[in-house]
Length: 117
Image 1 (cartoon, rainbow, N blue to C red):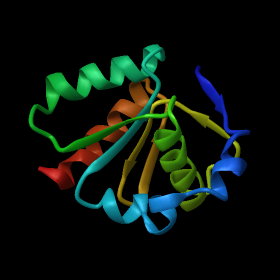
Image 2 (image 1 turned 60 degrees about the vertical axis):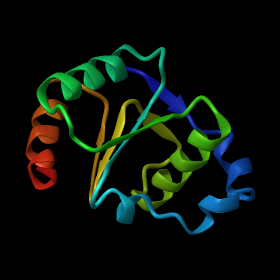
Image 3 (image 1 turned 30 degrees about the horizontal axis):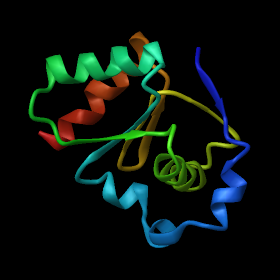
């Protein structure tokens, strides 16, 4: 399982810039937010599954390896009360937050995605 230590999040917390009022929970009511690392096999597997099974689904893919992605991840971390260690992919669908990717998370995603169709 891929775990991301979010030690740098506290530094970003003070420098949100335009993300200070951005709410992942609110925004993900109409568009799924998918946090990932390009080097994460589980993120890539989830991305492939979504693209193959839900073409045209509105998904905002956010690479957390850059400052903007990390700042948005910090917003999600706070709103969903995730703590300091976050598994990728992190998929936010309204009030639901899915971490990691295997059969259980795939089923949870399939259940959540119905509201976006």
